[in-house]
Image (cartoon, rainbow, N blue to C red; front, side, top):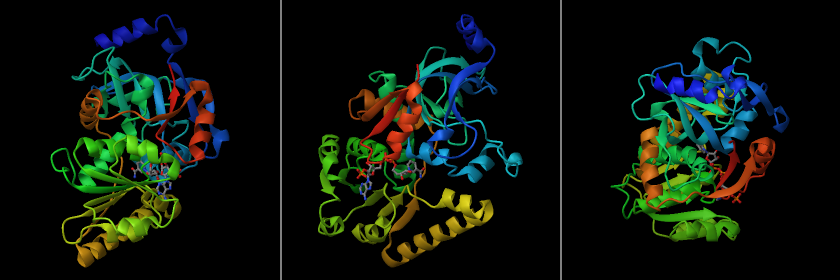
Length: 376
Ligand code: NDP
């Protein structure tokens, strides 16, 4: 295609790339930060189907999932999704490239690509079963990619896609919310100061919802600045007691997990279609520890039990929320960003040589928005 010719022309000044190698951070075993390795010998992921686009990565942001996957989290289920035929074989996923978000430029297109052209600035959240974005190039289907908001730099844009796709998938499919149905809905977000929370607050405010947030004392100013209507410092006194004194909620969006679900149910409006959606689910942990079949069955069973119990006792829907790749959803977010309704929240920036330091930052917790890595 024209794109591929252009790629060759672009690459002609760069012999190593003509040989199909690129720089990337890889792991070839699971473990702590020491397993992260920089290499210039990773194969460039060229176009293998008509609907794929190849992107030169300019910036990447990290998510708690990257730290967890570095340690082997979800390995069994993700391996099944990558290649069902090799699920019983050892180490077939290595060398594995982590990194989910990206902002970059299209450098090659499959013959059936209709929405993108060479040189387009794009953003995307790479599914965890695909090779990640801590690399010079990533190849995705065009459905997974979206045009980057014009007002954002690559660094800023890279901070949004994964938390945006997660929030949209969880709030729309799990929470039953959307642009036209959120006005006057009361939503509680737990963990409002992190990557997901700082995005979800802004999305829900853009949709007209009333947003209450729990966070630590030193994040109160940040989440208020993003538009949260009520902010409760969970480190000062009994936050559950304070929440119980408030008007009940239509949706609880839980980014903290643990015992939150034990008290959050009582904060929802009974018998009114209210929904509790949690991002902290045992599915991947169960498949890691119990195996694919037992782990999936166990997780599915516990989900069904909780869903039925809550529905029968108070008419509340209990749901798990998940990231889902969705370029068209990012198109909608792009419009909100260009309209100034959603701002990027970049807490820390690292260069491509500092990827291990970026992981260390994430491992310390207490995120206030996102950690971004400059690649190009
Ligand atoms: P971050 O690490 O970016 O943010 C977590 C935030 O929660 C931090 O700001 C932290 O700050 C705050 N926090 C911690 N404890 C509490 C508490 N008890 N009450 C209120 N706030 C608290 O994570 P993300 O926002 O990226 O993700 C949130 C969760 O969702 C993670 O567990 C992640 O793994 C999960 N997730 C799941 C997905 C899925 O597909 N199911 C997809 C994306 C995320 P501080 O400690 O200072 O209070």
